[in-house]
Image 1 (cartoon, rainbow, N blue to C red):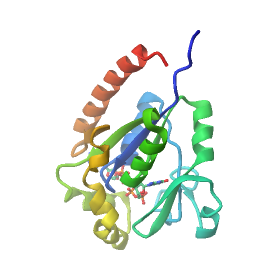
Image 2 (cartoon, helix red, strand yellow; image 1 turned 30 degrees about the vertical axis):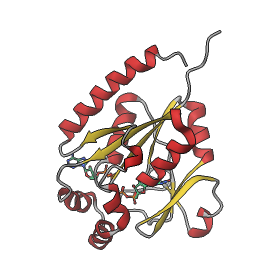
Image 3 (spheres, helix red, strand yellow; image 1 turned 180 degrees about the vertical axis):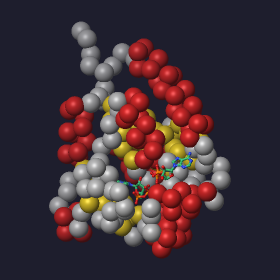
Image 4 (cartoon, rainbow, N blue to C red; image 1 turned 45 degrees about the vertical axis):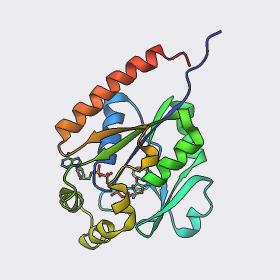
Length: 196
Ligand SMILES: Nc1nc2c(ncn2[C@@H]2O[C@H](COP(=O)(O)OP(=O)(O)O)[C@@H](O)[C@H]2O)c(=O)[nH]1
Ligand SMILES: Nc1ncnc2c1ncn2[C@@H]1O[C@H](COP(=O)(O)OP(=O)(O)O)[C@@H](O)[C@H]1O
């Protein structure tokens, strides 16, 4: 009997500005792995659109979602919905999700073997302020973000994730791209040999 290969969820985590969305975009364009959108009460940044970057919610509409997990990050609510993941898995066997490290821990506990985890990091976090400013974030929002306990926490890979995380260094995109491509080659071999 032929068994169907299991669905996979590639979680991309790390501190703000390290390049989670950049990596997610690359996995989509280069490897055809689309991102499952999440919900947030944070206001959109310049260039962000509802249904493209996030589902932007009010606190009232956020409360109506069926969320697998939710967190408060830098004073705003974020959550990933059961419906969005199910819908994405109906169309694609492998999908990605961009989360903070608390969310990554929740998913590892809930979905175990279905998770492939990428932790994005930089050796020089001082560069992240400039990246957020260049991205168009408001300077006041950048300062709040940099001083938030969640940002400080996510600069470091949590012990609970250290056994399963694949670390991608994104001080330069050339380096990050090389590490991702190497990892994807290894994964392609794993997927070919995996029975289901
Ligand atoms: N746990 C969890 N984290 C989320 C969710 N959606 C987004 N995040 C994370 O919330 C944090 C803040 O996101 P955002 O305001 O877009 O800032 P960014 O990290 O600078 O892009 C990031 O670590 C996101 O990955 C979610 O549904 N659940
Ligand atoms: N290696 C890099 N060098 C310089 N800028 C980068 C690099 N990777 C991403 N960026 C830029 O830095 C900003 C933050 O990246 P982003 O992917 O939005 O991070 P995150 O999703 O982790 O907050 C974006 O403007 C992005 O284009």
